[in-house]
Image (tube, rainbow, N blue to C red):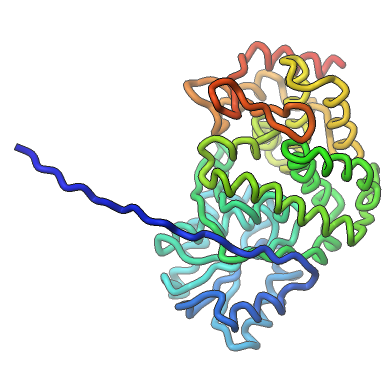
Length: 380
C-alpha cells in the first residue's frame, strides 16, 4: 500500500526592482553596490559582447576594480547568432574556471542579446544568482531590460529555451544610444512602436509627431534628448503595466508578442541578416493587415502603422529571399502555438489589443488565411 507526503511550498516573493534612466550611469551603479544594493556578493562578472566590450565593458571593469571590487569580464561575439546554448555553456565554463560560485553577481552590459543571454545564465548558474542590466541600446531599453524574460535561440526556434529571472536593477544609459549605428537604433524603434500599438494611442500619435526629432526616413540619427527620455520612460511604463499583471506569460503578457509570430520566423529564416526590430516591423505589418481582414482594425489604422514604421526607416515588405511556404512553416515553432495551430495576437484599432471570447489574447489562424495574405502583400 502506497503512502504520500505533501510538500507545501507556498511563498510570496518580491521581485520589485528599480529602473534608472539617464546618461553615463556607471557612477550610479558603483554607488548602488557600495551602498548595499546586493548583499553576500564577493565576486562580480561583467558579461558583454565584442562590440560593447571596448566601449562600456572594459571601462566599467576598470572603474569597479579601482573601487576595490573583485570583478572580471567575459565577452562573446556580437550578434543574435551568438545567443545560443553553446555560448551560454562557454561562459558558464569560464565562470567556473575562474572560481565563480553562488556568491557572485552577473552584470550584463549591452543590448538585447546580451541581457537575454546573461539573464538566462544568471537564472541557472548556482541555481540562480543576482544580476544587473546595464542597457546600452534602445532595443534593450524597450524590451529586454524589463520583465525578466531571458533565453537563447536554437536552429529550430528563437527564445524558446530560457527562464524568468528578474534583475535587481536596470540602468538605461541614453548616452549610449549616440554610439549606436543608425540601423541598430532603428531596430529598437520597432519595439517602441509595438508598445504604442498595443497599449497607448496617445504615445502612437506622439511618435507620429516626433519621429523626425530622433531619426530621418533615410536613417540619419537626430536623437533629441527630450524625445529619447520620453520614449525610454514610456516603453518601461507600458511593459511594466503588462508584466505586473502577468509575470510568467499565462495570458495577458502574450500581447507583448505583437508582431512576433511572423517577426521571429523572419528573423530566424534570414539567418539574422534581418535585425530583430526589422523582422518585428514586417511582422507588425502582417498582423495589422490580417487584422483588417478579420475586422479588428480599419484599413486606415493599418496604414498608420505601416506609415509610422516607414517614418522610422524600418522595412515593411517581405524579403524576396524568404518564401511564403518557409515563413508559414517557421511560424509553427512560435511559443504561442497550441495543438499544432499558429496563433496570433492582434491589435484592436491603435492602442488596444483584441480580447477574444474565450478570455485569451491570442487566437488560432488558419494556415490558408496566412498564406493568402502573404501572397496579397507580395502582389501589392
